[in-house]
Image 1 (cartoon, helix red, strand yellow):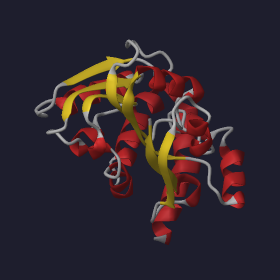
Image 2: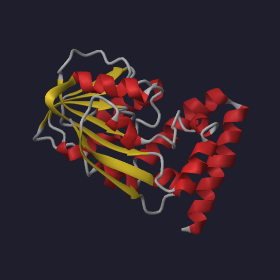
Image 3: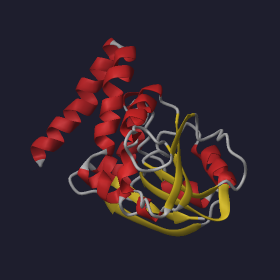
Amino acid sequence: KYLYYFISTFLLFVIFPLIRMISKKFYEKNVLPSLINSTCSSRPIKKQKQKVIPSAYGNVLEIGFGSGVNLQFYDKSATKKITGVDPSEELHELAITNSEGIDLDIELIKGTAEDLPFKDDTFDSVVCTYTLCSIPNPEIALIEISRVLKQNGKFLFAEHGLSSDKKVAQFQNFIDFFYPKISGGCHVNRDIHNLISKSPLKLDNIENIYLPGTQKFLGFNTWGTAS
């Protein structure tokens, strides 16, 4: 446990910043996509995703589709179509590969959550996992999500963010000046509960937990549904 904490912390705060400092282009093209893909595929993260994604139904929009690692969690019998939106060219290419052979109707769109190219009231479900942390303007993204979500539709989310522990939150705020630069724009100090509460969406339920085996500044997780 302590060895994992030491190695992961050393990578995050020494090795990755050093590689990015040497070559930003190399880091963002060759290191960052694999880092995001492996993190989103870790066992604790998978368990969190399994709490919300299987509830998606009908025409589904997934915000921050990434490399397509969430496809394994959808209930195929309840899902009519999945439309995935992500701004990353590198992850988009991985998603195309990972989508091959999946028995689901999948459409991939390279774009941003703040400017969704869909009509109002288009989707039965919108899925967003570990994405609100890295969207440049999450408030606008949530307005867009509310716009494209049908009146009786469900917004399903699982995110990490600002800890309820004051000392942990202080550390999260302290590292925010550089951490997004090595993590694909991830801000660990976003208050997920507050963001959704202030959006046009109405919270149906919300829960919190520190993910086991994860540093506290990364591991404060929030999940639930809104409509």
